[in-house]
Length: 296
Image (cartoon, rainbow, N blue to C red; front, side):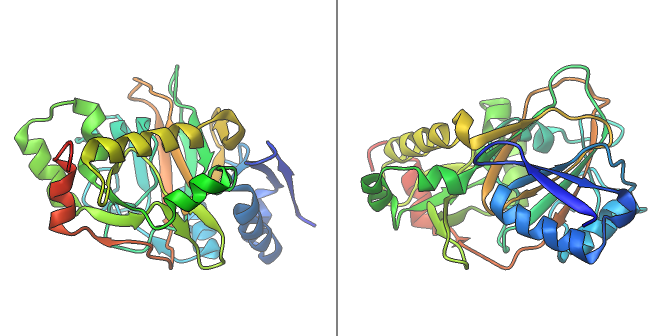
């Protein structure tokens, strides 16, 4: 075979060994698709793809999707490649990138099927920080006590863009709140997501802002506790980037975050693969109102 995949940790991660000339071969694409379901996140070390090669690989894995057209970071030459950077010449609104310092799932605050997978390549690195952590939400659910699984079944969670960026500012000015609220609408998703193949995962992240039917404080306490559970070392892989690395992860079953960095020179190029599962729907106004009531 022209590809081999080696596990990184028992519950998460794999290293893909493949020559760039064979990256889009049928057997490589099929092996990557299969391993993505089994390992969650895959690393192709220092393969150094161009934007065109990254887009071609993305298209072989599935139908590409672009859900960040409303934020700076793309250009006319490759509109479906989003540049993740704090460089103000490329990104004039850093809120979205700074929000990635906290656990999140891509696209969860948009009224669309969640992106199936994300493809990220390292073009320039920061001097400090900048590693990316991935947490396996399938394994986090599987290893919960059976009684807790029963308690969580059926719970619904409100996810908002505002909550995902709130840690960046603490008390943001009204103009920023209005900007965020205009970019995405609050979504309601199951806490335990039963996927089309029957597998179950938690659906968590900093964007999880409360539990439907629970007082705000109680719901957030539950979500934060579960996020801590899902981020324990057995479920997490930390990738320390090298220039040229290409990483692909199952966005439907992993949350991720970047270790904070301040170097504006760090540049990562992201492409996304569209999904077909839509676990949630727009949140009801009465559910949103409950989030503001500490005791319900």
